[in-house]
Image 1 (cartoon, rainbow, N blue to C red):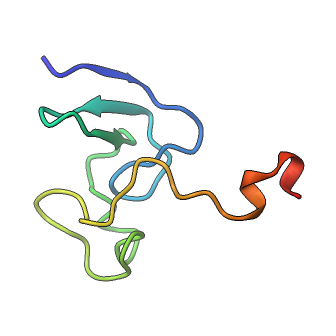
Image 2 (image 1 turned 180 degrees about the vertical axis):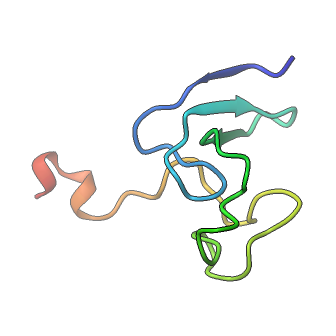
Length: 78
């Protein structure tokens, strides 16, 4: 069985939605899952690269946690 944990606020599913669970893959990478098995198919283009949705597997640009923006790195946004 694959190890998993509850997702933290801001961790993303491969479809771009807020993740509910995070699974640890065999290679050690973590991947989020929102609980909706549509893969974001009804949500427009891929939120990570802007192209068509990827199948099978996540976008090569997928990240569990979005990169911090300049304002996110400071307390209270600035």
